[in-house]
Every structure is written in structure tokens, then in C-alpha cells.
Image (cartoon, rainbow, N blue to C red):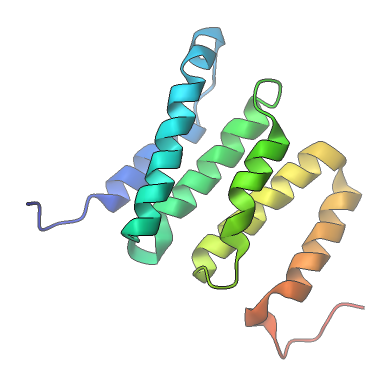
Length: 136
């Protein structure tokens, strides 16, 4: 019955989780944390938040956690979870964050050359850049 949206508060809360420094005890709670983030992503797809702010925060947090805990979380699994948010039907704010997260993961896994190649591919695919000069 709340006439006001708590989505900005919730998005900030989710994003703050990505700033945590995880210790040995925190890793035990990792599975539960990832399930909650996934549930928020599903919720935001059913009832979209303003400019996808909740999805953006979830994607950012997933990428941060994955990079910090790459020994415990398979990065390719996170990559597959984030990749659908690059769909051209997705609002641009979410697409940008998904691209950013995937580029960070690519850089972490394969280095700068692979990340630059992926960036070039993303720029060529981005429909909002039509009419701009293309890269050679």
C-alpha cells in the first residue's frame, strides 16, 4: 500500500553489497546473496523500475562480486547471466551497464586486447550509434 517507490533505496542497497570486502565467512553466504540478486532481477523484469535502476544496480553488483571472488564464482556463468541484458529491446541504461560489466569480465579473464576487440564489436552492434562514423 506504499504510494512511493523504494526502488532507489533498494538499488543503492544492492550496489553497496558490491562494495563489500568479502572474507572467509562471507563466502558461506554467497549463494544466498546471489539468489537474492537474481530474484531482484526477475522482479525488475516483471515490474520495471524507473530507467531500469534496479537491474543496473544488480548487474553492477554481480560484476563486482564476480571480479572480487573469481576463485569462487565461475566468470563464464556471470557472463551468461548478464549477456541477455545487451538485447536491443532492453532500455539503453541497462544495455550500457551490461556492456560495461561484460567488458570488465573480458578484461579480467583475457586481457586488454580481448576487451578492446569486444568493445569494437559492441560499438558496431549498438543501434543508437547508427549514423556515427564507424571504426576502421
